Amino acid sequence: MIVLVINAGSSSVKLTCFDSEGFRVLAKGLVERVGQDGTTLHLWASGQATLCRPIQVTDIRRAVELLLARLVDPEEGVLSSLAQIGAVGHRVVHGGDSVTQPVLLNENTTNIIRRWSALAPLHNPHGLAGIEAAELSLPHAVHVVVFDTAFHAKMPPVAYLYPLPRELYERDKIRRYGFHGTSHQYVYLQALEHLPGPPESRRVVTCHLGNGCSMAAITGGRSLDTSMGFTPLEGLMMGTRCGDLDPAIIVYLQERHGITPAQVNDLLNKQSGLAALSGVASGDLRDIVEAMDQGDHHALQALQIFAYRIKKYLGSYAAVLGGLDAVVFTAGIGENSPLIRRLACQGLEFLGIDLDDSLNDAPGKGLREIQAPGAAVKLLVIPTDEELAIAQQTVHLIQPNLNAAGRYAWLTAQ
Image (cartoon, rainbow, N blue to C red; front, side):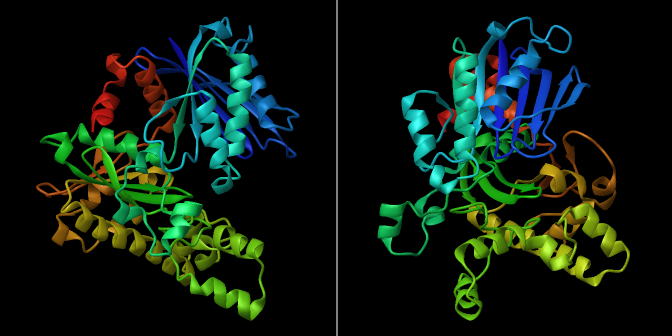
């Protein structure tokens, strides 16, 4: 069976085509800068770039249609017909507090996406637009929705409730939701395959460190806590997002400088984080490290604060879990920055965290262990693959006995 994964974002659409036997990638497609100048369509087949073409596309629906057309193009495509596609997995950011697993697409599912669009206005409406376009082009396929919030939806109330008047939770659903759930779940399951003992008792902290950053405390197949909250702004310091801060700062700025809610939102989401503290406008860790190497003190301080906050969450999650069996680093920074991994782990030997500098600094791809010999806690670098995770969860939902997606059967039972 051919499985398609569609990730429709605010200005781009990603598409990955899998063979469900072994989940081999047949093709990948991308339309970026949708509705902007410089819109481009990319296609990769069998790992090779086969197409890069400027196009004019003003909306997500049309972008999905063009990508599907390329899949069956006689010269550039990999399929003879769209009828070969048996299932489609759709990534949607926000599913609220009631969806804990992938779900079949139906009227109730689309209502859930619409209901939570107010909390994900840049993502849910575009995700729904991609779904509607795929349904029209692939009416014969089974469509499955995988929500980014689903993995965290079973967090206990002690982790998700804010100390605010209860009516704000009951009326407005103001609570902690968490994000990057598909990534956290995927690398957690990968880690379990490298940990001794029964999987249900393994205590794992996953660190998704990219331009957006979050951490999760996981055991028994459940996320017990995660660093992002009501929105993806809470938690760790990020590329351009502030992470945790005293909310009274907002009131102070409004009273003293008269800034508007829109300006506050822009300040906290786009003008803060690594970019703000380092003075490096891109907020890209590689640029900040380069500035540090050239003697920029602000760049050094930004990196130290970034790693310090990771360390704080590591310690708190060790307490939540009652100890640690593994720490996982994933996403762009987590997978590729030995410096951040080293700074984040320094001084945590009392928790059993002991990094081997030579293993940490050694280049490598795929899953690798970087803890010192004999260390009590495994330190793992695991590349995340959200598209593969969505494909596997899609297949597990519609063919639960298929061995290739079997690890999700264990999760479903927890």
